Every structure is written in C-alpha cells, then in structure tokens.
Amino acid sequence: MSFNNKSILITGATGSFGKTFVKYLTKNFKPRKIIIFSRDELKQYNMKQLYINQSNLRFFIGDIRDEARLELATKNVDIIIHAAALKQVDTAEYNPFEYIKTNILGAENIINASLKNEVKKVIALSTDKAVDPVNLYGSTKLSSDKLFIAANNLVGKKKISFSVVRYGNVISSRGSVVPLFKKMIDEKAKYLTITHKDMTRFFITLEESVKFVANSVSNMIGGEIFIPKLYSCRILDLANIMKSKNQKIKYIGVRPGEKIHEVLISDSNQAEVVEFKNYYVVTPSIIFYKKKNYLTNQNREKGKLIKKNFKYSSDNNSKKISSTDLKKFIHKNVDTIR
Image (cartoon, rainbow, N blue to C red; front, side, top):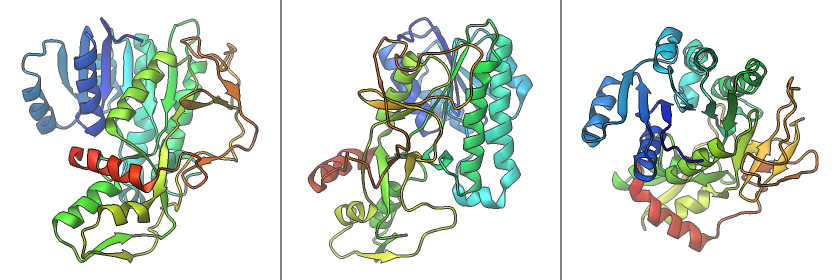
C-alpha cells in the first residue's frame, strides 16, 4: 500500500517506534498529512526541530485518555497507527488503574473516534505479553487487542477496518535487554545480570518493526492479528557476545510477571492461524456479521491454515539465530539504541 496522499495519525509518535515510523514515511512516501499525536511537549518540540522544512507534519498535543481530543485529531484521517501505551511491567503492578485508563480505555477512545470520523484503517501495536498474560500490563494489552478486533462488528456499512500487530522484543527500544547490557558495559559493571540461564527472546529491529506494520496496513482486511516470523536466541548467548573480557554473568532470578520464553501464538488459542511467507495471521475467535476470507490478504497473497494447537514461542522457534549471525546482528544494531 502506498501512503502517498494519505492523512496518517500516529499515537505515541514521539516514542521510539513513532519517530522511526515518521522517518520511514517521510523518506519513502508523500503523505498529505502526518499527525504527531502525543502528550509530551518537550519530545514534540525536539522532534519538530528535525522536520523544520517538512510542511505536511502536524504536531498535536493530546492524550488517548481524552476522547474529545482524539475526535478532533482524527477528522479527515485515513489511517491510524496506534503506538501509544504504558508498558513497564513492574510499574503496572503498582499503578494498575493508570494502565487500564491508557491501554484499555484509551483503545476504546480511539475506536470511538475512528468510527465517528470514518477512519479507513486502524492498526494497533500489541506485545507478546498479551499472550496468556501473567502480569497486569499483558492483561491490559490483551483487552486492548480484543477491543480492536471486536470493533469490526461496529462499522456497519462504513468502510472501516481494525487490526492488530503483535511482535516481541524490539532490540534498541526502551526496556529492551540490549540497552540494559550496553549500559552495564559502558559503566564497566563487574557483572551482566540475567534473570534465568534458559531465558529466550525473539528479536526485531525498530526498522523491521516499522516495515512490518506498514506492510500489515497494506495487507489488512480487518480483524487480523499480524505476527512476523522472527529470529530468537538465548539471552545467555547474547550476554556472552556483548560482555567485555573481564565481565562475568550473574543470575538474579525471574522477576514478577516475567516469562522465561516469549510466546507470540499460544497453543491454547482457539482461533485459526494462517501462515503466509513472512508472517502469521491469528484470525478472529468471534464471528463477524460480514464474513471475511483470511486465507487471502488484501494484496491477493494466499496463505495456508496451520494445524490446531500450534504454538509460536522463542524456545520452539525454528529460526534460531547462530552465534556468528547474532554477533553480526548486535554489532550492526547496538549503536542504534534510542
């Protein structure tokens, strides 16, 4: 799908993903308008300095908790990329209702504004933590996912579609293990700390996540959860590659709400899963009033149904990255940490 001559609103647009997505749009397309929707005045000011000569950017201070503000921001918008969220696992446990207000009620506000202003395509970013959640953050994102999927039953005759993108650990984003290791190395810490020796994670770069979201906007019919096929590795292997010569590994135990392995598709999932060349689609578990064919995407690419009880997790992933390729991957991406 071309984003040329489209009006695109990005929530959380001053975050790691949002900034990279805006850069991708301005470099590869000629959108009619890009709306930077976020609540951080300073981040908006700093971002604005990078695009002084970009006349199609609009900087919109707002909070997704504020439905009236969203209704105003989404007028004449064609596409919404919903990246705004509260996402620190530990913090969520101590501030549960703040996470509910942003991640769940904020999602509902986006849906209502999109329906009112007839936004053609809305795609929400999710997380592996929404799969069989064991913490409050994951529970709020699962609820958000279900809201966006169910919203397809509210469109009536309007040409509006809602879908979700789910992926794992973004290697250079806030909260990733790689920036944590890099900080320990830069500070010449005696140890690199790891929670569990068997822990595994999927990995995706910011640039890869941006391209995947853009492609999902192009491929979406409405109601899908898009999941990219990713490489995974053991965190221990990652630490051994990154650590300095004299640093040692220290195990500190699994934190509350943390999983040993990332799961992007659970074997307890009751919905059908369709496999495409570079990604999976989890189809809706609910019945839509208007039947959709998820075996063929919007670009006419055909997928195939996967057997029931399929599980896609970082420990059973067939795309395990070798030590040599992991070393290349880290050296290429470690300096892009934001």
